[in-house]
Every structure is written in structure tokens, then in C-alpha cells.
Length: 377
Image (tube, rainbow, N blue to C red):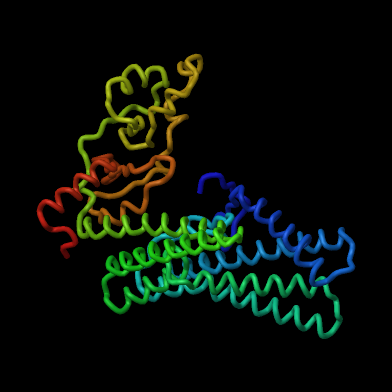
């Protein structure tokens, strides 16, 4: 996710934090320390309220991390690749590959809400127990606040709307019952769009009634609508391209350039001769070594172009999307990265034989539509 930085690892995968997380902690700390605690547990100093607010906000952030960690841990246990875990203002996001069975998809989806409900139950139990045994009001309020927040998080995430976990549960159950994964994805994404629209409408209704919290509900609903719409397009794409191999969509031959050339020579001899926005690179042995985008070359100061090698400013092959000619196209389309965009280098026996771009995918979808084979098995 753009705007996030890596801060460590969790269950063996990179852990990232979005810039909005510190803002979220401040908002929670302010609400707990300046509004909730003074009302429920009056008579304490401002310092006590401030410290308790920060502790409560930190614990809530930690519980959000546990929610996402549960997703990542179960995914890895089910042999699903996990790219990273990112915390951000709306909770968190775990980027992973597609589950291969409905049972695995269900286990991954339900693990997060169950973890939140478990944390919420433990916090509520600890809070009520502490109140009965010691009467410590401030720690009790913090624990009870934390408990109810996690219960709400767990219940809210179980709403049947993609990308919420409840929507993933619906996907898994429909996949298991019908045996048609693409149909399950399409129905669940439509449900997410409907649910998001209802949340936006409800949010604006609350705003018109004078409740500022309606803006937050409308924002979440809009986010759900946007993501669900993207998933619906993705489901349509997968249905259209079902059964196709990478070799059927790739463009060949590929415009390439030597990675040992200086940026200056590469621009003069390769870049200005091509109409593409990116060029695949080959090493001394003629094997693919990466991909360079021309806009990156243009950003290099003229004084440095005679010294830098083009491979020094290119995206190395290890960070590019790579597929074999016989790979399924819909599986290869899961690989593109933010650095190279919708470009898949097709490599066979160590040699570059083609490339798949967004135009190639669009062309294949048009062909399937015209031939009437869209979604054919």
C-alpha cells in the first residue's frame, strides 16, 4: 500500500505501517483520555487520563495487529503465499495469494473476526474481574473499552460485504456449495457494492440528522463500494480468461536492450527507437535481467547518464512479474507488482520469449467476447 513503511516481521512475513496509523492512535487516545474516562471514572488528573488514553489506543492497535496476524498465520498454514501485513486507518490488510480450496478460504476469512471476538471477550472478562476485585476504575474502563471495541470489530467484519471478512466467508461458502469459484466471487462482490451503498446512504442520513459520526460510516461504505467494484471487475476478468495460457496472450518478439549499456547510450540506441514505455533488459548471456521504465531514465540528470548503467536504475528480475508460457493466464495476472505495473515477462528455459501487458489482456478479452466463448470451461 502506498504511504506505508516496513517496521518489522510478523509470523515470518513483512509488517508494514501506513502513515494513517499514528493519526488513528492519536484520535483513539484523545477520545478515550479526554471524553470517555473523565465521564465514567471522574476525579483523576489530566496526566492519568492522558497516559490511560495512550495505553488504551496502543492496546487497540495491537489487537488490530492480532486480527491481521491471524489471517496471515492461517494462510501460511494452508500453504497460501502471504506478501505482507499492513496496518492502516481502517484496521489492516493482509496481501496473500488465492486459496486453492473453499475450506482454506473459509478458514482464512473467519480467523480474523474470531480473534477479535476472543480478544474482546478476554478484555471484557479482565475488566469486569478487575472491577470486582480491586475497584481500580481507570484500568477497568480501559479494558472494558478495549473489549467492546474488539467485539464491535469482530461483528462488523462479519458483515457479508467484500472486502470485509464476512464477504470472504460468503465467497467461501458459495464456492463450496456451487463448486464455481468465479460465480461465488462475482456474487460476493455485488453484495459488497450493495452493502457499501447502504452504508453510504445511512451515513448521510445520520449527517443530515446532525451526527458527525455519519461521515465516518459514509467513508467506510464508499471504501467498501470501491473495493467491491474492483473485485467484481477482477471476477469478470477471471471468468473471461478462464482456461487461457500465457502463451496465447503474450506479445512476441519483445523489444529488449542490453543491461550493461550506460543510460546515455541506452536512451540513444534503444529508448528513442521504441514506442513502448518500458523495455526488458538482457545480460551478457542474453538472459532476462529486469525491466526499465523510460520515465525513470528521463528523471536521471543529464550529467549522470554517462556514468550510470541502465541496470542500476532498472527493476531487477527478482522484483518483476515472471511467468512461463504454459502457466494459466489468470494465475499469472496475480503476479504484477506496483513497480512494473501490468507487465509480465514470459520466460522459457531462462530465455525471454514474450511479454504480457494490459493491452494484451484487453485484446484477449475482446476476442473471447466476439467468439462467444467468455466463461467457457
